[in-house]
Length: 158
Picture (tube, helix red, strand yellow):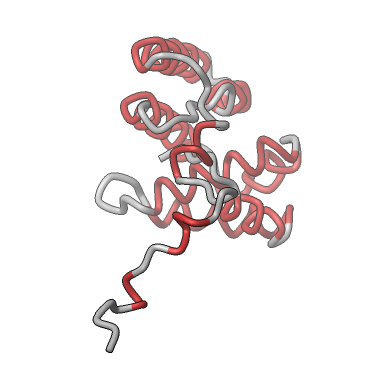
């Protein structure tokens, strides 16, 4: 009588083509250190605030969407980038959102959706009502394909 429980056997150990999560996510690493990513996020945040001071919301949004921090060790840079972008989103009037979204490239729209989900994941920090308005308008303009692309992308901003 066999005493080994076959359900506890790790069959992936016998598969040469099985990848670990680290191997899968390693290809998405940006190759910069956390300190460099933090400095870049702070610079971007300062640039966005300068645009906001001038009243230039569109360029502030475009600058906030530039060069997102992708990587597992970049938590502070991701937080700074998310806070910066979501501050900009709070300043737009609801009537202007659809036209602003239409002016973005498809990659920027997908990145915007990633940031919206990052903000919605922390309702204690961000205004969910504003984020849901942006989400609704983004889906109206782009369609549900944006959601699918964001959910299936391994690169995250939170």
